[in-house]
Amino acid sequence: MSVGNNIRKYREMKKFSKEELALKARMGVHTLESYESNERTPELDTVLKISTVLDIPASELMEFHDEDESPFDEELTQLVQDIGVKSSKLILRKARDFSEQDVLRAMNLLYDLNQQKN
Image (cartoon, rainbow, N blue to C red; front, side, top):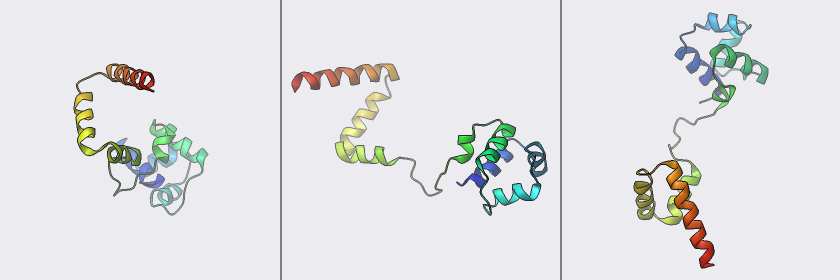
Protein backbone atom coordinates (compact mmCIF):
# COMPACT_ATOMS: atom_id res chain seq x y z
CA MET A 1 0.00 0.00 0.00
CA SER A 2 1.13 3.51 -0.76
CA VAL A 3 1.07 6.51 1.58
CA GLY A 4 -2.16 7.66 -0.07
CA ASN A 5 -3.80 4.27 0.37
CA ASN A 6 -2.70 4.22 4.02
CA ILE A 7 -4.15 7.69 4.62
CA ARG A 8 -7.49 6.58 3.15
CA LYS A 9 -7.46 3.29 5.09
CA TYR A 10 -6.81 4.95 8.46
CA ARG A 11 -9.22 7.83 7.74
CA GLU A 12 -11.96 5.32 7.05
CA MET A 13 -11.02 3.23 10.09
CA LYS A 14 -11.35 6.35 12.27
CA LYS A 15 -14.65 7.17 10.53
CA PHE A 16 -13.50 10.60 9.36
CA SER A 17 -14.92 12.09 6.20
CA LYS A 18 -12.46 13.65 3.77
CA GLU A 19 -13.79 17.06 4.79
CA GLU A 20 -13.26 16.38 8.51
CA LEU A 21 -9.70 15.16 8.08
CA ALA A 22 -8.81 17.99 5.71
CA LEU A 23 -10.19 20.59 8.13
CA LYS A 24 -8.44 19.12 11.18
CA ALA A 25 -5.14 18.68 9.30
CA ARG A 26 -5.47 22.24 7.91
CA MET A 27 -5.44 21.39 4.23
CA GLY A 28 -7.86 21.54 1.34
CA VAL A 29 -10.15 18.64 0.55
CA HIS A 30 -8.80 18.60 -3.02
CA THR A 31 -5.25 18.25 -1.64
CA LEU A 32 -6.28 15.35 0.58
CA GLU A 33 -8.04 13.70 -2.35
CA SER A 34 -4.88 14.03 -4.46
CA TYR A 35 -2.92 12.25 -1.71
CA GLU A 36 -5.46 9.47 -1.32
CA SER A 37 -5.62 8.92 -5.09
CA ASN A 38 -1.79 8.86 -5.25
CA GLU A 39 -1.69 11.81 -7.64
CA ARG A 40 0.61 13.56 -5.17
CA THR A 41 2.82 12.41 -2.31
CA PRO A 42 2.55 14.43 0.89
CA GLU A 43 5.61 16.10 2.43
CA LEU A 44 6.80 14.73 5.77
CA ASP A 45 5.33 17.62 7.77
CA THR A 46 1.95 16.91 6.15
CA VAL A 47 2.23 13.20 7.00
CA LEU A 48 2.97 14.21 10.60
CA LYS A 49 -0.12 16.48 10.72
CA ILE A 50 -2.35 13.75 9.30
CA SER A 51 -0.94 11.13 11.68
CA THR A 52 -1.56 13.45 14.63
CA VAL A 53 -5.18 14.01 13.60
CA LEU A 54 -5.70 10.27 13.05
CA ASP A 55 -3.85 9.48 16.30
CA ILE A 56 -1.51 6.94 14.73
CA PRO A 57 2.28 6.87 14.32
CA ALA A 58 3.49 8.57 11.13
CA SER A 59 5.38 5.37 10.33
CA GLU A 60 2.03 3.60 9.85
CA LEU A 61 1.12 6.03 7.09
CA MET A 62 4.51 5.78 5.44
CA GLU A 63 4.72 1.99 5.52
CA PHE A 64 4.67 0.51 2.04
CA HIS A 65 3.04 -2.88 1.48
CA ASP A 66 2.91 -4.65 -1.83
CA GLU A 67 -0.57 -6.09 -2.23
CA ASP A 68 0.86 -9.32 -3.66
CA GLU A 69 3.59 -9.55 -1.04
CA SER A 70 4.10 -12.85 0.74
CA PRO A 71 3.40 -12.75 4.48
CA PHE A 72 6.98 -13.95 5.01
CA ASP A 73 9.95 -11.66 4.70
CA GLU A 74 13.01 -12.48 2.66
CA GLU A 75 15.20 -13.27 5.68
CA LEU A 76 12.71 -15.82 7.00
CA THR A 77 12.42 -17.43 3.58
CA GLN A 78 16.21 -17.62 3.29
CA LEU A 79 16.56 -19.13 6.79
CA VAL A 80 14.03 -21.84 5.96
CA GLN A 81 15.93 -22.60 2.78
CA ASP A 82 19.26 -22.67 4.65
CA ILE A 83 18.23 -25.08 7.40
CA GLY A 84 15.56 -26.97 5.47
CA VAL A 85 11.80 -27.13 5.75
CA LYS A 86 11.79 -30.15 8.06
CA SER A 87 14.15 -28.59 10.61
CA SER A 88 12.34 -25.25 10.37
CA LYS A 89 8.99 -26.88 11.15
CA LEU A 90 10.48 -28.78 14.09
CA ILE A 91 12.02 -25.63 15.57
CA LEU A 92 8.87 -23.56 15.09
CA ARG A 93 6.58 -26.22 16.54
CA LYS A 94 8.76 -26.43 19.65
CA ALA A 95 9.17 -22.65 19.89
CA ARG A 96 5.44 -22.00 20.15
CA ASP A 97 5.33 -24.09 23.35
CA PHE A 98 7.72 -21.70 25.12
CA SER A 99 7.71 -18.06 26.13
CA GLU A 100 9.98 -15.63 24.34
CA GLN A 101 12.23 -15.56 27.40
CA ASP A 102 12.52 -19.37 27.37
CA VAL A 103 13.42 -19.33 23.67
CA LEU A 104 16.10 -16.70 24.29
CA ARG A 105 17.57 -18.78 27.14
CA ALA A 106 17.61 -21.87 24.92
CA MET A 107 19.32 -19.91 22.15
CA ASN A 108 21.95 -18.70 24.63
CA LEU A 109 22.56 -22.29 25.74
CA LEU A 110 22.94 -23.41 22.13
CA TYR A 111 25.32 -20.53 21.47
CA ASP A 112 27.43 -21.48 24.52
CA LEU A 113 27.54 -25.11 23.43
CA ASN A 114 28.65 -24.09 19.96
CA GLN A 115 31.40 -21.88 21.42
CA GLN A 116 32.69 -24.74 23.59
CA LYS A 117 32.74 -27.04 20.56
CA ASN A 118 34.89 -24.58 18.56
